[in-house]
Every structure is written in C-alpha cells, then in structure tokens.
Image 1 (cartoon, one colour):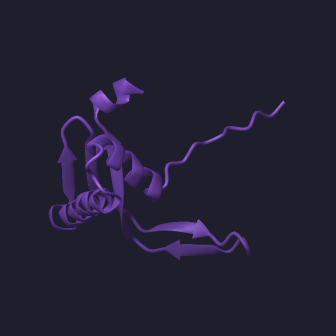
Image 2 (cartoon, helix red, strand yellow):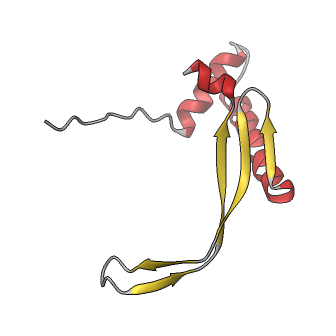
Length: 100
C-alpha cells in the first residue's frame, strides 16, 4: 500500500495575512506586504554581498557552490558536462528544529 504525503503549502498571500494578524488590528495588508518584502529583499541582498545571512533562533542562508560534474541527458541518456553553479542553502537553527 502506497501512502500519499499531503503537503500544506503557505503561499505569499497567506504569509502576508499571517503577518498582518501578528501585527494586530491596526496593521493594514499593505503594511504586512511591505514588511515581508523588506525582509526578503534584505536577506537576498545580504546573501549576495556577504554570502551568508544568519538569523539567530531561525537559521542561516548561505551561498553554496556546486562543482562541475558529469550528468546524463534524461531524454537521450547521453553523457553531458554540467557547469559549476551557485545556489542558496538554508540550515535551520537548533531552536527551529526543536520547535518542530
């Protein structure tokens, strides 16, 4: 028997609504959107310039380098070279892990 995992996803508008509720009845949706946008923009800028953004009690966003490697074209099965690249990784803090 195969069990299906059901994932609950919070999208951006639901996150904005959650922020608005947390800020209280005087907060507008626009205020919550601006707050979220400021946080996301700051994290992106921090990772881009410093390669690491650490939020104590939450986690760390960090640039990770992927080395060039050999892969396979899934369509043809032919071997191909995959270029080196950069990506952003997230490592949750022990406090966040413990809260799960």
